[in-house]
Structures are given as C-alpha cells and as structure tokens.
Image (cartoon, rainbow, N blue to C red; front, side, top):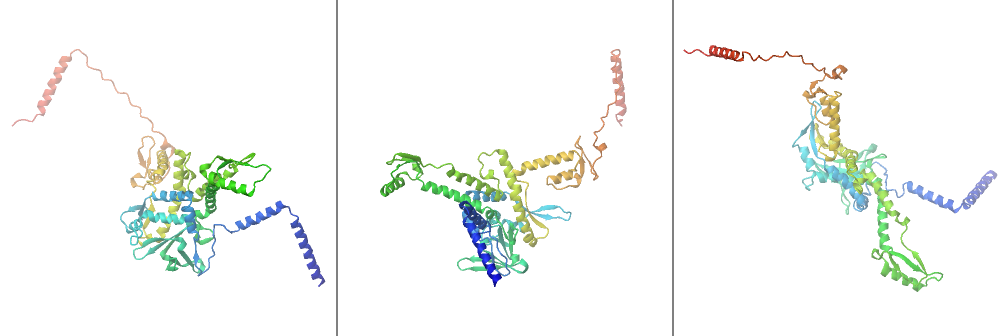
Length: 486
C-alpha cells in the first residue's frame, strides 16, 4: 500500500510540474503548438481531397465519390481545369485509329473494313449515335476527373457504353478480386444493375495503395483548384463589397456618434460602393484624411492564382504556355505542343489501347490489334524530319543498312533494301551483316587516262587527187554490194 501510495503521489507531483511548465509557456509557444496541431490534423487526412478506401470482401466499394464535385467546381467552374482537360481531349482526338494484323513473319499490315473498326467507329449505335470522338472524349474526361473509367460491353454485338464512375460500385471478392459490379440506373429509387467482371472494362490511373481504385489528376490538384477558385471568389467579393473609395475624411479626437456612423454608412452604400465609383473621395465633416486603397499585400491574390494555375498545368501534364500563351514565341509553342503529345497524350492513349486490345480485340481475332497512327501529326513532323535526316546520315556513312534506316523512320523492311549505301556515289552494295572494313570505306583510286596519239591532218599538196581516188573506191564498193539483177 505504501509503495502504491508513493507511486500515486509521485505521479501527482509529476503532473503538477508538467502543468506548471505548460502554463509558463509563452504566448508564441502556445500559438506555435496550436498551429502544429492543426497542421498535423490537416496532413493526417482530415479534409484532404484524396480519399483512401478500405477493401472488405463482399462490402460494396463506391469509388469516385467526389466525381460530381470535381466536374462541377473543377471542369465546369474553373477555366484552367476546363482548358487543361479540353487540351488533352482535343489533342488526343486529332489522332486517327486503325486496325492492324500481325503476320507470321512478325510484321504488321493494315486491315480495312473489319468489324472491330466498325465497332470502334460506332461504339453504341442501338441506343445513341455516338461517334468514336465522343466515345474517346468521355473516356478521357472520366480518367482526368476521377482516375477511373468503366466501359460496359453488351452481348451479342459487343456494343460499348461508358458508365459514370460515381454510380459504379465494386463488390470485392476473395483475395482482393472483383466479384461483380453494380451500376445505379435510378438514383431516386436506388435501382442497380449487376454486371459480371468480364462485362466491364475498368481503366484506371493506378493508385499505389489500392489496386481497385485510381487517382485522377483533378484529385492531385484539388487543393490548387480550391485555392484558385477561392482567390477568384475573394477578388469578386472584394469588388462587390468594397466602397471603391480612394480616401475618406475622418474625425480627429472627437469620435462619431451613432447617428453619424449610420449616415456615413448610408452615404457610402448609396454613393460610393461598387466598381463604378472607384477612386472617388467621400467628403464628411473631418480634419484628417486617410487612404482606403488596397495595398500591394491585398493584391497577392493575383500571384496566388498564377501559382495555382501552374500547379494545375503540372498535374494535368499540359505545358503552361499552351494554357496561357501570353508572351509565347513560335519556338516554345511548337516545343510545348510536341511535349504535350509525347509526355501526356501518347502515354494516355497507350493505356487505353492496351486495355481494349486485351478486352475487346480478342473477341474478333487474336491476330488483330487496335492502334493509333502517329505519322500524320503536324506537330511531330519536325521530329520526323530530324529522324529521317539522322537515318540518312547513318546509312550514307555505312553505319547502318538501308533496311535499318527504314526501321528508324517507321517504314517496313524490304528484301531489296538489305544493302549498304555507298557514301560517294550513293550506290548500293550487298549487306553481309558485318560492318565495312576501313579498306572498303576508303575512297576509290581515280583512273588516270592514257595519252592517245595525235593524228596529223593531211597535207595540202595533192588533196584533190586523194579526194578523187577516195570517191572512186567508194563507188566500186557500193557497186560490189548491190544485188545483181536477173
């Protein structure tokens, strides 16, 4: 008992000392601790846009809960988000799609008029006349705003329909598999349609901590979107609520009475509030003048909006100069367009292409492949020309063969092009599969022409006699070769 009492007493004394030390903290330390607590709560997940979900077998997993918020406040309520997504969608829509067949030799050949291409051009003709452009646009919009896209395939014609991601429920199965999908078709009644896993194509931007959900660029840029919207709303409210006065006269030592304060308020509201009265001066009974204009600190909202816009462009992978081309030049605009294709659009289309080739294409033919064409893109023509020039230089230097040069510029190989290209006369020689030797690369030795004897012209003496003799000989020869008459 004594030890227990002693321990309790020691704990009590210890707590008193701790409380005394806490009470002796300065105000600055207390504010610092309070801010640290708020920051830790904020970073721990509270009010953070990113929503991590828990996967439980049999428990419906509804992902993309904030899809409507991102669509309304981001895509529909923020010009930066709208333009960034439209830039990705419109750029991806410029690219043509085609179907290729893999041959036995390992090459690919274009295939025309296939049912697979007909389905891609007209994904769902029975319910709505949706074009391939609208179909691809919807897929990209869902990926950009929710990180998930669900495509339903209806038998027997394999008609395709893109489902709203916020109305899809995933029912996890054993070992974190998918048992089925539930799609809400009537939100007021809660009517749902179950789909088998093989009927749904789930394309997602992978979440590293959840294999059933995706992370959208809009989700990563949620704070920047809120900051940009808040700055815009702050500036709008500032314009609506400020008086627009440049200065106002104030009383000195004598304070205003209640009636005077009300009069000043009414005068300001009626005569000076609003952008039309900006810069005017309110004149009241006073002996002092004070400025009411905004300081440079009050105008920080503009810098905040620029920073948030840059963060948005980074999240969506769209160069900032394409969203805000003020002061841009032809060179950096052209480079930004190529960067948008190579770093954002092509990886996104590769993900979509691989997903459909693994889910839809085998239903038509295992040797077919749905691909998109990179050759006819105007923004990449400069890169294509540079590649062709480099291939030509390598082939004329006998570093690569003509077929290898054709492969560099995306052309198919040909049997008659398995040759070396001579650098001097651009003639071809058979390729042995080995690099040319230095003796072969040496320029040919020039041939020195041999001297020919000079024929002296006949002398002037006796020219007439020699001419007559020559004519007589020609006549005799002509008479000898004529056919004899019968």
